[in-house]
Image 1 (cartoon, rainbow over the protein chains, first blue to last red):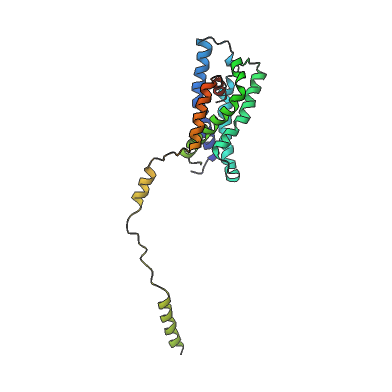
Image 2 (image 1 turned 90 degrees about the horizontal axis):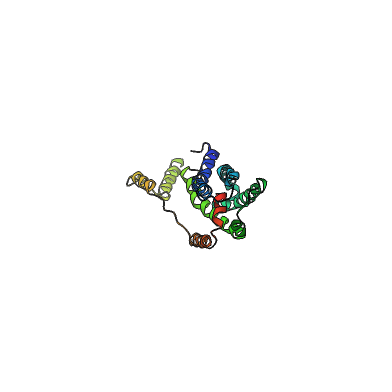
Length: 137
Length: 74
């Protein structure tokens, strides 16, 4: 079972955001096309669809590669991903001239600790479980 | 003289080294091992994580505006 460790780590990493993408995409589509929310979500949908899952996979590969030396808990390692994805997502909205809704921008300072907590729990219990299933942690 | 020494040495060795106890297993351990492997692993959640999850739920209820931003980053 020691073969293709990094491939298995990548697959375990992308599973959680790929499943959650179904929820996110449904919410976005319903908001946009059913309730006619005047926010061009399709302009930035590439971020949760492609960038986020791939970065989760890459981040899990990084966890497996660094675990023997760094000994950082998987929850904390996952929470650190917020510090990469957060600015990246924000940068993309600026580049693509995406008008973020005002109510979202208003709660952004509260959103950072919330995102850290969500990522910590998701990585500790979901990605950690998948790593265990695939025999890499 | 040498033969006598040898006999004495043998006697001393027999006295010093205790005979080995039987190392054979009394029962087969493999069925228990299989049972253990089949047992579902229980996930232990520390109190800190429960508290964090509770705080998180409260925060999401208080600031629902965070939810779209979270969905964008998940």
